[in-house]
Image (cartoon, rainbow, N blue to C red):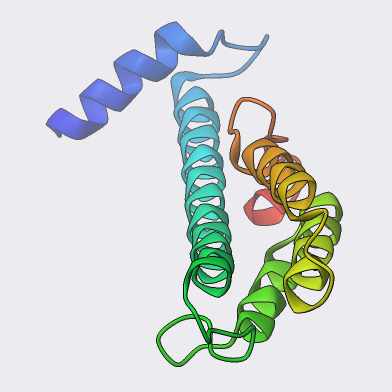
Length: 142
């Protein structure tokens, strides 16, 4: 009951009632927004972890004598971690990760530029302020 009252009070002040709508509708809208934000934060946290793993693996390849892209991180290959980056996206991060991977695998002259490009793209992809909030008009905010 206390939770309902707190959500009702918050919804009533945070979401103006559209004409003809009641408090119940406002509570539903406020709850849907909170759930959409929670999903967004969870997606950003998952991306951040994947990107950190990729950077850590890349660092191992650069800093550890004998380390290769196929043995970069505790039994995981950097190629496999790159696959996780590709699944997580977005495209600019995937392209930057591929460029960094290519530098690690071959010619390392442009490694600093490739790393910085990846970092910039990754920072943008996990910045919640720049992320698109899921639409509430579709089921489950998808």
